[in-house]
Image (cartoon, rainbow, N blue to C red; front, side):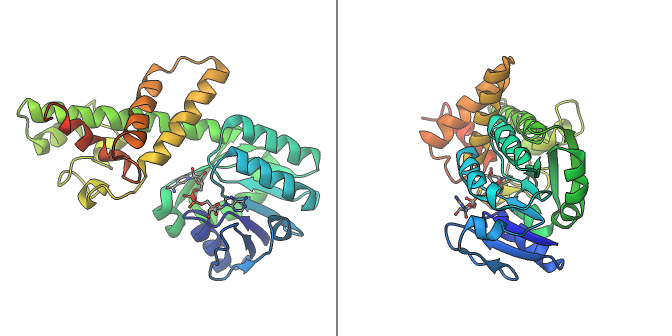
Length: 290
Ligand code: NAD
């Protein structure tokens, strides 16, 4: 397939490389002038998009996605698929999809879970909103870049699934970290705490797979001095998107709001920027120790 790929950052570069390795003709563009093995560089986003059957975007936020969409939609051929894999606000996803559909394109919002490791290994999960025909056309690309793609309904629903999932993740990570810090103060051994909770009703992905306590449970960023992994900054971004969506939809999300405020303090006023999102545990440990 002839593919345009726009946004060759930490996630986009390995995703584009995997598509090229699978035999697709990939033309890529990034404002930072990144070059990726097997990907033909283009001079602009429009040039990467022209003549492509599918254009994949992997960009930082909704404003940039809207700018890029304004540039590439007129360059794309009717019937082509605009496949946005960035994590953006639901409103931007729906606005861009509308613009693409008006130009005769298929539009999919397909944010991912799995991080840079999943992008490199081709094991991402895609949560996809948009028309069924576009989903079918893009299916073989999802199979190359990931392990699972779930069609979640019309445009914007992929982003909705992503922010709901990450709101649960942010809140469970915070409460798992505060529970470890409480257990410390109560004199409960961390290994014993893990052994009980990981097989009890307090278990979650945050405890069982990504345990925030070093030396306990499977290897996780906690065992690597909280080097991300999934950076606290990105968790904050996703929690803000969730709160923005909750406000627009008049949904009551007090736990999500509390998690957002904690990550905001951690990233913006403490030392959390650039650390893994599970580094909330040392943050709670410090409480009461000056
Ligand atoms: P990144 O900052 O590494 O990459 C974004 C790239 O977009 C950069 O290389 C930047 O130069 C490029 N860019 C910015 N404006 C552009 C423009 N107008 N035209 C072309 N290129 C432009 O970010 P990332 O970690 O690759 O994340 C990309 C998206 O994936 C984000 O929406 C993020 O929330 C989401 N995501 C990231 C992870 C992760 O673990 N990194 C996991 C899941 C989802």
